[in-house]
Amino acid sequence: MKKNPPSLTGYDMFSIQVLFFGASAGFIYPSLIVRSTTGAYWVPLVVWAAVALLSCLLYSKLLGRLQEGKLIDRLCQSAGIPAALIICLPQLIFIFGALVVMLRAYSELITMTMLPTTPITFLNGMLLAPGALALAGMMPIARAARVLYLISTLLSVCLMLIGFSDVKWTLGGPWLFTNGDFLMIRNFYSGSFIWMGFVFTALIGSYNPRISGRYRKSYIYALLLSFPMIAGFIYLPVMTFGRELTRHLTLPYISKMDSVYHYWVVFENLTALFVSVTMLYVLLVMALKLHALGESVKSLFPRANPIWIYGIVVLLVYASASALPSWRAVEGTIFYTLGLRLYALFGFPLLGLALLSVRERKRKVAS
Image 1: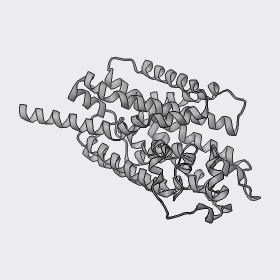
Image 2 (image 1 turned 90 degrees about the vertical axis):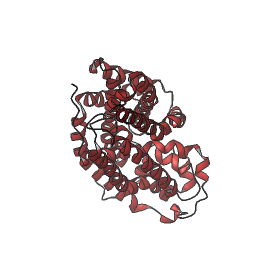
Image 3 (image 1 turned 60 degrees about the vertical axis):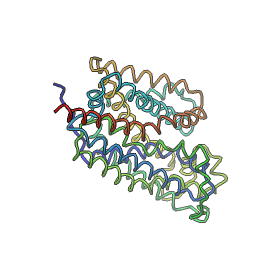
Image 4 (image 1 turned 180 degrees about the horizontal axis):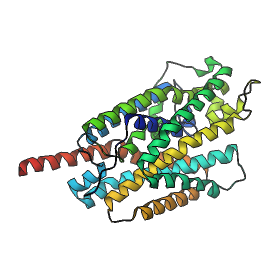
């Protein structure tokens, strides 16, 4: 009998979710939001946060139907492996695409800010560290998250407080006006990726109704803590450079860090410090995504060797990230995978609930 993996504690889940926000919101996301509206920037943030909470509740309800088991395993038992594969395939493609975008985007970030002559193919090799951590299992990822959450969040908050020391608050307006124009702009929808950390934790670990409640609460607490930080990533460059200039910056928040100069700041290059802190977030989150993808494939193909699964996934992610020709291609990939993200947010949990409901109904009829 297959042994169920240990479940994450509430603090584990909370730490992972905060790290996910930090890894996703610091460099691509500010430009997407700044270009998406002429009104208050916090409004699209609230809209997506509300959508994410609704999706998290769906996942929580789905996980609450499990009895100390993994989600993909239970779907395979309920519908059979072929049907479960069809349902899970868009989810797996979504996770794969999220890995490719995160790896390539961060490699581009390092190239733009610190190592302009270093080949992208070499920087993409950082994927080996998350790959090894993902293969080691869920609990090593959780233990790393507990430590990195404390270090990286403290450093991020310190950087943000330093950045607030030379801003003009009037440039952040309008603070209340919004006309809903962001609903017609694709950048608003492209930014959906930062709110989806709960999707990955749903695919790993063992769940029951009690752990499902812990999963939901941890995400809510992480969202409440991270929301001001996400807003800071957006408003800091705007209140420094103004709206129009910020719209034309490829990396607004990084540009803001590069503009900070105080005689009392110990580290002269705050951009390099921010990029280094972000690496803590990114490596852990890539390990989480790799583990979620690897465990899902293992559930669908139980006879496959785990080492081969993770090895092939790492090679495919590396090759795909290296094949993207430019930063614009990265941004385009974010937009064109919107359908997969919407499926991951709502289609997958709704289908999962339907499958488990049919399975329970058949069992009651048979008994």
